[in-house]
Image (cartoon, rainbow, N blue to C red; front, side):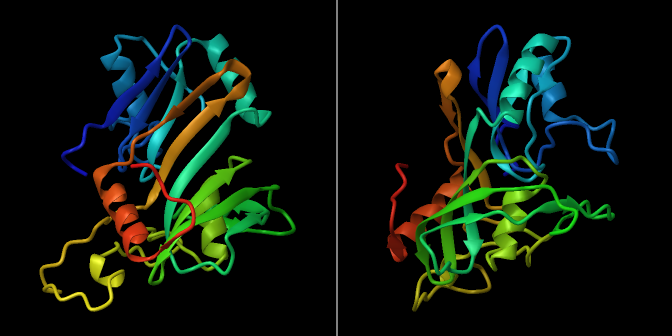
Length: 247
């Protein structure tokens, strides 16, 4: 994704800014790379603002929608909406494996592991309540296109919940094998050169697709990046589709 801009501006008003970020850029400064440019800093510079306040975060390797506030007051207001679960979030994920269900709600409690990998673990005794609704959109071979609706905002929530269900994300080296998705894995009888085959997608296959704030009558969607779109199209084309995406 080196040829992509760091972000695309989706929406801006006097209170907030919504952008769609590419995979690989952190939303805020990371502890081990304090001096490296991050999305919040770059966006503030580009908009000639002294500071932006992040309302919610995405993992560095997740692509899609991020909402920033321009003022402390707006930050408090929109953060409260997230905490009160008044903001609806939808993610698209490509997972390794085929679910036995078409819809499923995962409520496994989650806890930061506190290790060097910054993992999140399932801990039924000490973990915080967590809920993600999943819908199977399509599958081909042993790969699935899944819609995820998180109702809580735990770190790595979608990734951990899917991995716990035996469906680790494509490209997720932390909770899965970390391998990309190739056409040969989807298409029986593929006759290309395996030594020269390039992955359809070779990064974390998780995209923050839609955000909505019904209370304010606001909603946004982030177009799929080329690699995610190519993989999703092939899954729909070569497998079975329950709810087709509009590309």
